[in-house]
Length: 285
Image 1 (cartoon, one colour):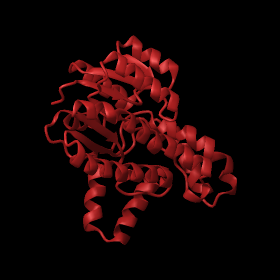
Image 2: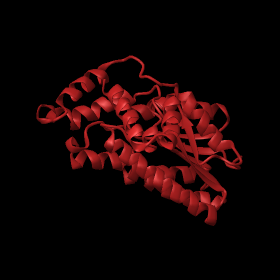
Image 3: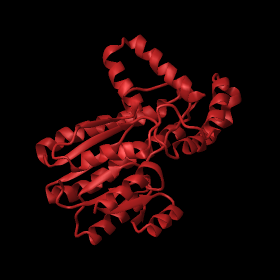
Image 4: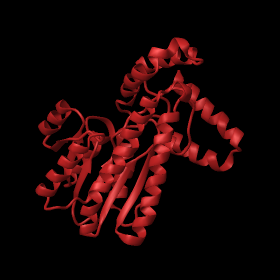
């Protein structure tokens, strides 16, 4: 158990981040709940949180958040839950450099920079927990998820390296990856925003026009996606990573993640490709 029960959580406007903030506050943690938009920060403040405006692509906002935490908590921070991110859909040949860079800025480079900014606080205390919200697509890619999967693969590799390095230099700082499949959240709405920004303008010229038209309809739907679980399922794993004396390097959440993890071990490459293609078709509508 951490001596300092303070935690910074990114992406608290809804879904996993909001639920994590609520449950940790109930458990007596000092929660620094952050969100990208000012209106979401105001809503968090109304719920009694110490709320910070933090866009993980903004160096200035990151510096301001860390400065605030240092002043507010005597230069200490017990844990970081890197939860902010979004999912860019689209065939890899249709994604512009701008779309790919934007995906990485939020899902990878922003998380890397924020983690590096909190590490000195944890080193000074001699302990800490860094929990990364990754994805089933950090285990294996799928059609039309190339950008998102690539950003999560990068996060997984970087986090593995960090964990191994900290074992030698500061063994009481633990790095954990949580790998959920579909979770009830605003992910679908956010997918639609970036689909319309980067993919929809070029649909007529794409080799995947028919798939995109189905995808556009699927993103407009409000029904539940197969294998979907509530945010609490992710928060449970995050809690274990936060409070266990010996947290796991990885936590699989949802049936889809377990299916992918087991299938990668027992199926041939061609067999796994068939599974991943089926998942891609289900997601595309």
